[in-house]
Length: 101
Image (cartoon, rainbow, N blue to C red; front, top):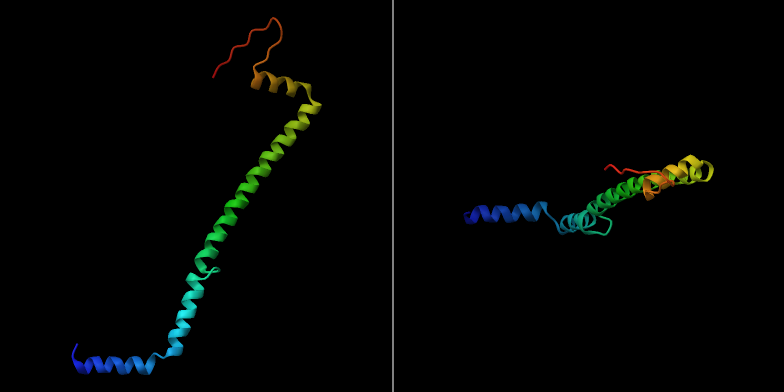
């Protein structure tokens, strides 16, 4: 760069870039990227919310399953017998049980 182009660049900077513009851009950049409520943090929080909503849905489905199973165990003796036989490998007297996995 020659001296004349350097001087032209300095004049251009002084003419079009002011301290107010630099401060404004600095504040905007800080608020968008480095603040506690920045765009990046907002996106991360939104992803976390979606993950937790999915986890809540899965837990509610599991809860409904076990509530239904509990209700059936209280009212249906056949269900209780099936659960006891499948999970605890219990058997009646004089009965042979073969476990196939």
